[in-house]
Image (cartoon, rainbow, N blue to C red):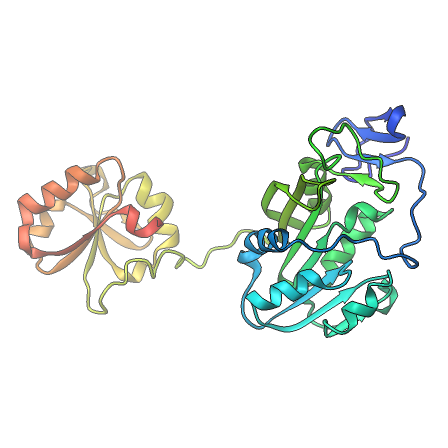
Amino acid sequence: MKACPACGGNRLEMVIAADVECCLSCHHGARRKIDQPDYRAQAVAPSYDPARAEDQFRFLKPALQPGITAFELGCAAAELATFLRTQNTFARYDGLEVSPDVAKATHILDQVYSSWDQVPRAGRGYDLVIASHFLEHMEDIQTQARRFKALLAPEGFLFVEVPNRSGHPRLPFDTNPGHLHFFSCSSLTHLLADTGLEVIQVASGGFESMRYPDSLRVLARTHQLPATTGRELGAKLALPTDARLIVWGAGGMARELIAPFFPAEQIAYYVDRNETLWGQQLAGRPINNPNLLASESGFHVLISSIDYEAAIRTELKQRFGSRVAKVYGMNDLLT
């Protein structure tokens, strides 16, 4: 039995009117017969509306840093690249285009290839790979997804935009013969996930043209197994170098957020009202009776509670007054 090209499932159903096989698992659609135009002989990309480029730029912002490298598949006349270069500096911006638009793109981009075979395989890869209204034209989307990943630098971003199903909320299916695949949010994210790419941002409603006013946009990166340095929240408090920090509370918040993600060496000790915890340690730091603070002066306090923060602040003020240099809450760590 034929499998879904996006998720590999075998629950397919034929939509006769559209000549499309639809997957009942991820809701992907794939055209059964291929009758694409010859893109090498005609330029078919619509002219870029400035509002569209601005909209794509806003979505792409997390991936844009000065001096990055970029590669755009189906770059057409390089109108998106032209706009992005007004918003960000690129060390290099290359592209791939098979249509006659390649002649225009050649004067704008650093390097434009007219076939995948010409694209170099060696090297670090690109910090940003763009495929805007490109993937729906590809017969073998599994191979193409692997090519996306092959182009990426280890920490690079992939931006993909495709029509959302038919691309128009009033139309049940897309009759454009050049579009071979019809993506849902679930089918696009599943395709990329199977290739080792993790979608970190997704949106619908992207405007491409009057015919395709509803596009899916995703930003993805190569999936990395979760790892911690134990210092993720270390810089948030901006503590003075000689600060003596005491954490008030050694319960769930301290164990779930402070102990794994805040540098232990910056903590003098924890205090907690639960006397069964006194004498124990949390991430190598002792847990003491709050009364110990009566012997301290000029210390800083991090309250490891959200629900009881106001009450603890009141208690600190009443019991220790000006001996407390500064009080921090979880809001200071997490925002």
